[in-house]
Length: 203
Image (cartoon, rainbow, N blue to C red; front, side, top):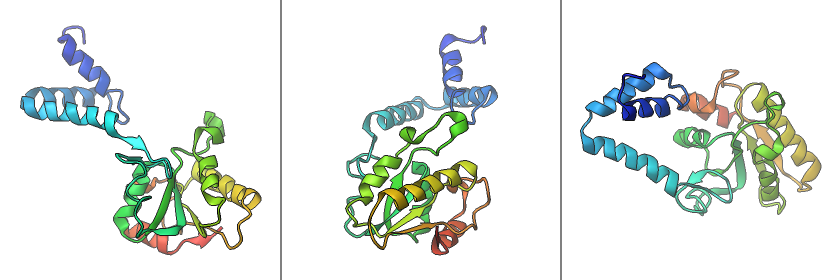
């Protein structure tokens, strides 16, 4: 883009680094922003800065939040004896939309992937185990994404709970397989997720 003004080229380059955004889409977005009113572009820029400056990870569940602990962990009305384990914060949003699950969450921030060099130290498995030691949790719902990496991660967590957590009556369940194999929770519709939660089974 040597003939294009440097600020335009810079914005195209930065937008094209976003997941799922190629150069063509980045160019369209850039020219959309150029044609937009200045205050709209400013609000977009301020929203991006605000997200980076004000969002933190909850020290209990590792979901994204403005306050620590997050609103779910600090809500006394939530079911304190169940934890639903998910891969990403977007999965929490998807499950919350169903209105079915009323317990707590634990966000791993990824899945184990030996082929890609992602091991247990790269995600929040050990932090989950620490939450289970005191015996207050009676059910762990493994809601990792269907597919090899999600299933492998769930299997490792299940084995860790079985071998390292000596808490009687702790149940480990997984979502019912109404979810398409290889799909992500964030893309599933609310009805499918509701049935998957209600039909979860013990691992």
